[in-house]
Amino acid sequence: MLMLCFFPCIILALAWVFFFVFDSWEAGEAYASADFETTSVSRATEAFVRSAPWILGICLVWFLIAYCANTAIINAATGSRPLERRENKRVYNLVENLCIASHMDMPKIHIVEDNSLNAFASGINRRNFTVTLSRGIINRLNDAELEAVIAHELTHIRNHDVKTLIVSIVFVGIFSFLTQILLRVLFSGRIRTRNNGKNSGGIIVVMLLILLLAAIGYFITLLMRFAISRNREYIADAGSAEMTKNPLALASALHKISEDPCIEAVTQNDVAQLFIDNPMKKSAISSLFATHPPIEKRIRLLEQF
Image 1 (spheres, helix red, strand yellow):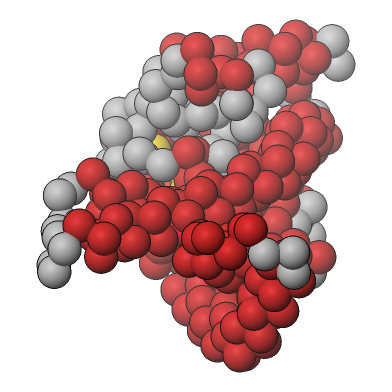
Image 2: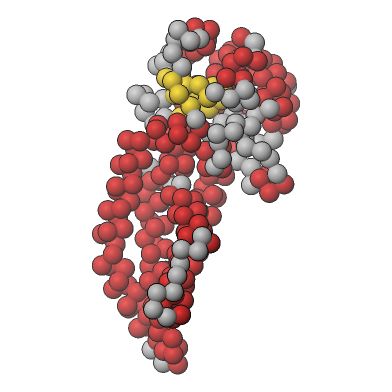
């Protein structure tokens, strides 16, 4: 709830900064005036007050869309689809046994048609809690290992991690979306001189300013994501060991997953944080901003149980 409240507050703060900076740029020679700062603050505040209801309305619409369509958004971003019981009774039996033993409601089960090994949980309420497994993890793990992975994902659901992550990805991820759209517009050659160079220059300045503010908002949400992503994996590993009474099975599963976790359908870092291990190809920069703790450390901790 704090994250949901924080989101429109960031939007409103960045909107005021936009009005102030844009007014200052438009004033030009007014820097020579003694009361320039007071005038700019006053005009920016006036414009902000007029636009605030519209900004809050857009945030509300985005929240409603994200709440109703979060499952479809995650499915589209990961390439997952429902797994029917008749397709794989083995997976359903493992999930049902764990849910009964843990007094949990049965989640939906989805599959990603990829031979790599990975899994994630998603959803924000009982109607759409989902455990998603890749084709590779189903085929290449034995029953004990697959059960441990499923228990890890069920722990995320039980601990409400998935709700927080969906808020981070779908609700707050608008900053990442806005930044990418503006970058594409700026570098795709769509900005053209209409009447003269001054008009074109003004458009570019406004676009760059919006891009800068969107990037600042994205950086703030990135810090929020780091605060919630790393520890939750250790806790979910511990929850899996508690459910299955077999921590070595999860350690073995993580070792196999670490050898081939990359899911081709996943191209966004926002979505990658859902998985049991980062499903994107790792680089020096991605390691620096990793949302997951080192899988080797997770394995060592499980082996010490």
